[in-house]
Length: 179
Ligand code: 4NP
Image (cartoon, rainbow, N blue to C red; front, side, top):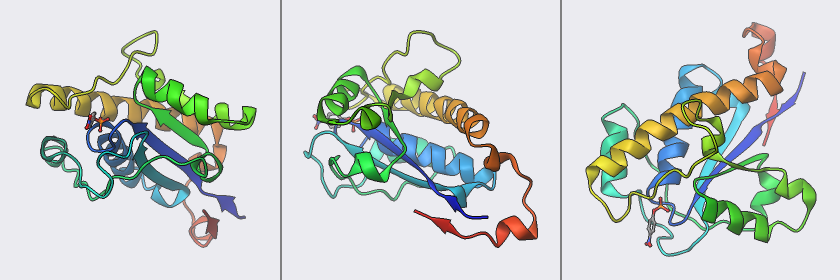
């Protein structure tokens, strides 16, 4: 059997704080669950202020304290991302509105979600708060949120894509995957 990889893209404003933290947390989780090869995971920003930069040093520090090494370089969202990815997770309402305003097709709009939709500890889909102008406590808070939302997102995807639940056998391991 041949499965298409599930494309998951995390989006914030600058792509140096929240979305690389989310990318790292989700990659870490799917690696832990031995599901890495089923996914194509990336992050980007709606703005281009920090293109090419590594994540903010405090984003890197709090991730590393949880065993997550971030290697992403910032890039800006483009309309092609609507074709390349299946799930586009916006960190806040402003990112969400921006993405919807760029989506010209209904099918693309349907791919955009607020990430905190998958946070089972809150209702009403609040923002992942922007930690950029604050101290380390804000970065710690973001890290906790993105790790929690990653668990909720993976649960949702495992329910939606039943092949993620198939126990790995030699046959499954030999499967070819596309991007
Ligand atoms: P992020 O945080 O969107 O979570 O990466 C920010 C990073 C940079 C800026 C704003 C937010 N900035 O204005 O440069």
